[in-house]
Image (cartoon, rainbow, N blue to C red):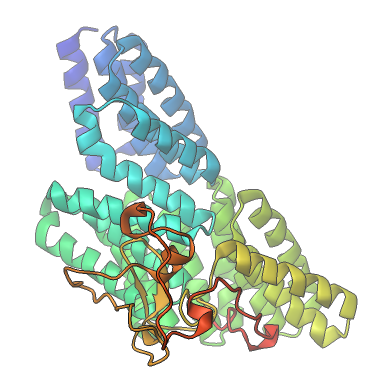
Length: 461
């Protein structure tokens, strides 16, 4: 099969795929892969197979085709193709919750010599890396990567990339419990779909609606959450998007749990768990098991809750998600406290505080926990996160200024960066002399005194 014929068959497959004839498209692309001798054509068809298997949730097959694509890129000896194939390999590992591998492959992409593809795909590399950091609960690094991806999107007028970044930012702020921003960013994504997405895949609308549903539920607007989730699920069923179907089922279950309708929540958790297991989304399985455990606690079935927690804990440690581990230790602590089992209780208290320190979920100014309850947060250009209320506190030293959403032209260095001997942009600074009005805790690195575990509200939603 020659170059022109290969190109025609790829286009025909794309038309079939866009008309929801997925299996026919896959069969056609596989025939092209078997018969074509054109390396560029083979590379392109492998890219189509990677994308199609990703959207269907066949992540292991996605990984297999990504590996073959890298071999093809090496045969072509072209850095542009190599960067694209490594990005697909990173995405495959991201979907399989192999976050350390994802970060490694993204760094490989960024380390390749400057190419045309680097300008086009750099934002997508940063987005994938940010999602991986978020999967590991490395929040500052995740935010830094998302901001880089957003800059790529703005600089290249890439509304599609901006939409995807906004959805990831919605997930980020939902996890650190700034529910206002958790809703703002997917609403921004939906706005981009409305303004620019006439020719886009409906998956972008479905994705924004799902993240809006999550935020609405956390804010307690359960009717709006249900409407958004139903819209997202409708599109996911129409396009056979199994990963999104699983997420919507999980969201439906959480909504019913929030309403106190546990009998309706359980079967939806079961259905979500079935799909999450099928596609290999281990982090999704952790979220399902956490919801199931909360339902058992509400029913006073503490032994069943502990069984679900144990399964979730194993998966969370396997994946490396510290926030999930933190929530599970917190729930375990409350169960063992009610049972009066002091030794087990103490063990979970210790691990809980270790997870809090590992995730660095502390405000750099007031020293209180971030993610304890719904709070308005703000980030500086260095990606350190603070409680917004702390920036206007009279206790703050005069040398520090707040950054609004637009931001002033001149910014004082971030306090947390000063403690590390760094300035904005990573420049080393000499330590500033302490202002007379500055309390000592702002000029000397101190860990905040741990709050009593039962005062933390990580499990409120």
